[in-house]
Image (cartoon, rainbow, N blue to C red; front, side, top):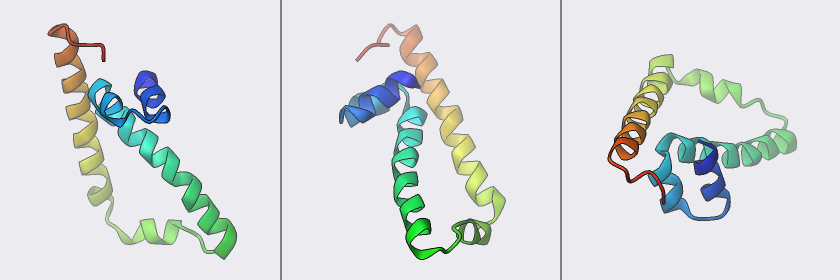
Length: 85
């Protein structure tokens, strides 16, 4: 995942997604956290109320599925010898 973060920060999104899709997703979430934090700081409104509106399974199941598929992809490219970008 660190390689994926590294590619993401350098602007090579294709390499970031290829190397580890979940790492690219977490890097994008980390970038959006800055904007969310600025929104909370400026407006003073808590963001957890918006998150609480969605059921837990609606947040957990897609995230768990992407994480599982990302590791399956990583194992596949490693075993097939196409691990590097």
